Amino acid sequence: MTGLYYEEFEVGQTITHEKGRTISESDNQQFCDMTMNQQPLHLNAEFAGDTQFGERLVNGLYTMSLAVGLSIPDTTDGTIVANLSYDNVSHPKPVFHGDTIRAQSTVTEKRETSDGERGVVTMQVEVFNQDDELVCEFERTILSLKKPE
Image (cartoon, rainbow, N blue to C red; front, side):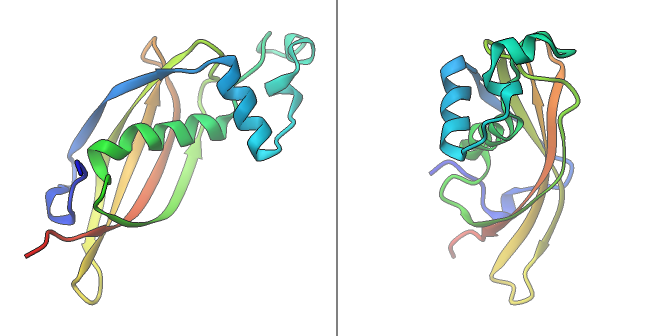
């Protein structure tokens, strides 16, 4: 277990997630297949070639999901009760096959639950490509365990 307990999160703390991942065509295809998302912008090279992007885009939900996965070891691995919400999602730049993404999470808010047994933590997650361009950002709110006494 490498995640943080509620008490270990500090407002303003930025956690850099060291691992990144290069997104392959297969990753994007499998995610679209599993989620039944048949958007031609993600899957059809000819269609996507005629758009302003000139090529297929990686599914934005995959990018977001991958960022959450990259953040787990440093934030919530074994210390989470539940993800409560994902809010204010934006994709300021597209992600393409072959891009390598990395993420960082900044704690923006925390509070104890009304029973005092757990805590709610909100983080701003930023996702960057290999050129350090912001490609996705969102707020992730979790219900966190407190340290065992």
